[in-house]
Length: 190
Image 1 (tube, rainbow, N blue to C red):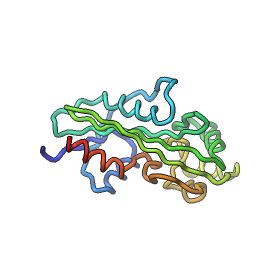
Image 2: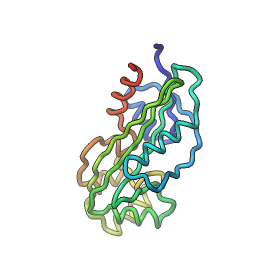
Image 3: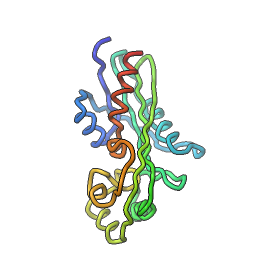
Image 4: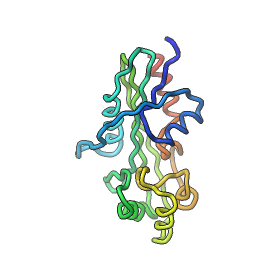
């Protein structure tokens, strides 16, 4: 098989940064997909469903193309915290996360013209208690509106608010690169 052409169907600058940092050559493609999901799904089922759904929006042109789609959620209290729509939602999410443990799930789908494979990764994140002032400082200075759960572990919140993580750091950023490396190798070897 020829060297595969990886097509990353994601506008996320963090996913692009992680793939490039890991040494992958890829092209970014744009897809537009609704991110609603059936209400009965829980935890990891949600980002897997969404990554698979996103993958249906692009058909690989030849067998050497691999489309990569992904979705990341923050999960706490049997609730999904997606990207906040406004300052109020961001404040509510960060108040809920303050002083507690939550799980970040990322679902990834690999799709060629011949097959499809999905997997997920999970990372536990524990926050220190956050004051109202810290939450407002973060929202005003870090603009968390494009981040699941209203925070980025790679910015101020990770430096000041995160007590510990258990699992893949890059998964919290939005792309479990170590697991991806193993899964794409397996996908290409099948």
